[in-house]
Each structure stands twice: as structure tokens, then as C-alpha cells.
Length: 233
Image (cartoon, rainbow, N blue to C red; front, side, top):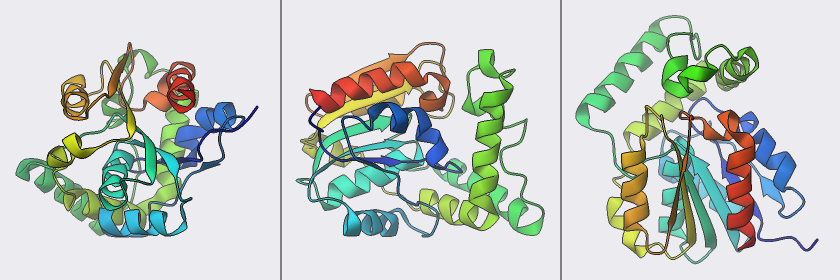
């Protein structure tokens, strides 16, 4: 089978390549896939620049949560290189002051104490209530966080706080765009996905039922099916 565009998959906060494990396995027959490192920089712009420096001339781009923030910056910098764009469980808006303040409180706690990664108290904000007893899924989420670690977590949160409001960018996006969100996503709910889909000309919105924030892990087959269709359209 002839391969489609190269595909760059960008993880979210405290996530690694494991976030995309099903998509990597299932889509490698139609696309050459790369998951960049998003842990080394303190700004979204620097991370986007790092990715663009080694990315193919033209490519498909998918980002989940923080990965979506980075994807927006890549599109802003090189709109003609991004031929297809998938925005999963993410948000075009910048942090509100109270959101940024909450992140800083968490960062200060981490800096002054032990890094605990994703704890049991945080899991309900990340996955659907029906999956809280899924030990394999919960273990993947916790392992990713510990693999990212304390210092990278602080860098990532700093970058998220400093991100742009990407709503003015939406009408200028010409890439074939897919917007995906879990119906019960508590962090980036369907209303912000709808806002992105409404703002990007010709985009498609897909809502994944009985799914929280980490759609690629919670409903991997369904998400991968939509991404395959998006890639090959």
C-alpha cells in the first residue's frame, strides 16, 4: 500500500509516545510516524521550532491536549507545510488567570516536595468514570507521568501558561482538519472542541462517546479509525 503523508504525533502534558501506541501500530502501514520530544523547552514556540527544524517538508500533524497547543504554533509558523491537522482533546484558548495560578500552585508544590506524577486524585479528570477501575489504563497514565518526571513537568507547565490564544488563528487554517474530543472530557470539553471546529473552515468534529480526556488511550480503535480516514481522504 502506498503511504500517505508522514505523520507527526505530539503528546500532551506528562505524556510520552505511549499515548499514541495504538495509532502508531495501526497507522504505520499508511504513514511514516514520528513522536517528538516535548519535554526539553520552557515555551511552546521553542518546542514548535525544534519540531519544524527536523520535520519533513510536508506532513500531517496531530496533537492531544498540550500537543494541540504545539500543533497550533507549528501551523502558525509553517502553514503550508501542514497538509492535514488533527486536534484531539485540546483547546484554542489561552489559560485564564485562575487556571495559570492553579498551575503555578502545583508547580510550587512539586518544586518543594516529591514529584508524584499522576495520582489517584487526578485520574478522574483524565479518563472516563467507567474506566477508573481499568488497572492497565491507569498504569499507563501513571507510568507516562513518571517517565516524563519532575523537571520536564515544570518546563511543560511553564510552556502551557505562556501559550497564545489561538482563536484568531483558526480562520486562517487551510489544512484538512479533524477535531476529536471525548464526550466526558473534563479538561477540554466538547464546547471548546466545537469552538475550534466552527472556527476552522471545512473542519470535521468527532465526539467520542463514553470517553474522557485521553481519547487515544481510552477509545483507541475508534480514534484510530477516524484518523485513518482523515489521513487517507
